[in-house]
Length: 261
View 1 (cartoon, rainbow, N blue to C red):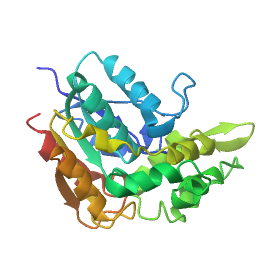
View 2: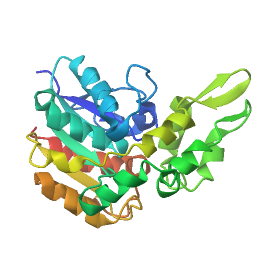
View 3: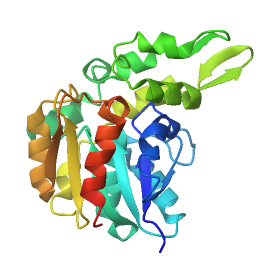
View 4: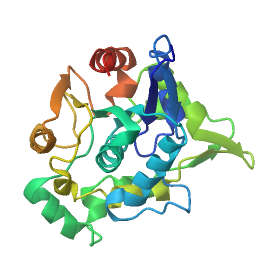
């Protein structure tokens, strides 16, 4: 009997290889695939509400020739949700991991802010656009990133996965493969139209959020979940990057969710 297929959709700025340790936890019972980097293909330009990136995901799933269980982290959770609403036939189910879901009155405000330079202050775009992306060839990037606040709680294996998949040697330098300019532009176009998908989700779905996430107040997850009756699950002591901070705990919760899908 063929094992079910999991499709991992990465967070903004983190190539799919960053999740190698997490995906290893599923090897016994599932096959896994992942598109390495969204936002870098000129055929799918970054646009308001990420629709072209949703299309990029849809085309990737179509190429698998079978419905998938989608596990999407942050940005990946949002485009997976939209894709599942638009093309439910491609999905066996959906697990969203700490997605930046904006609905209600705040989405209307953010829709306006996205058209102004202030979006770089309100979102992580401001930090992303000035992110250092080159280092001397002999730099120990694992040690370098371990000192940064975003990475300080990473499982050491996941941090090594990120460095291995997210940096290449070029012209005697180490350089990020995920362009900071692309990362910033993705942040600037956060979907503010999720209300239109109310009652559109027809596949099984759960949303796991980190108990200590700083992406949004928990009320945003609650408001979003009510649009499609999605069950919320809190991961104890988890921050926004919990899939790469607690890979075993994350996988255990996800496996319990998807075991009958």
